[in-house]
Length: 82
Image 1 (cartoon, rainbow, N blue to C red):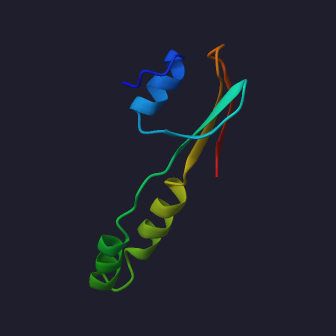
Image 2: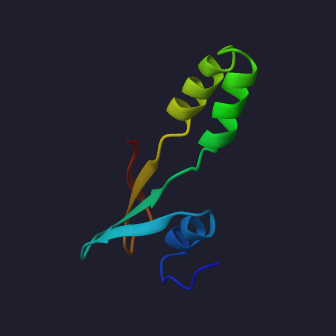
């Protein structure tokens, strides 16, 4: 766990989020998920393109996430997928 003064931010950092921006009142954290495109390409070729819908859906569903948290109050301001 991180040693950030706000426990909510420390928990998010522990879950793999990284601080993307900070202001006096908020902290914006970002988390991206990695997709093994080489594996999906091999599976798509081996299955004669039958695997391609799975690859496309997986790519869409694992989009990066951004969370903005009040620096000291601990209340989440907004959460969005980009």
